[in-house]
Image: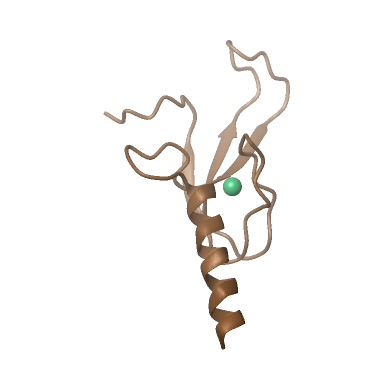
Length: 88
Ligand SMILES: [Zn+2]
């Protein structure tokens, strides 16, 4: 069984357009080509009592077993790209 603590289905997707990232603390957002977790919670969850679908999009991996999380990785990658462009 999965050790993920979330109780609702999660899909790993690759962004085709810029998206909000629902991480905390907030990150600048999900850029095209970056992977994110698409969390969907159907209405009527007993613990939360939500009446509508809840969706969260968060950089993948949100909860890495070791190493930095997806938001940190994305930020580091962007910083690397900025330096490469500055050096060109
Ligand atoms: Zn993020």
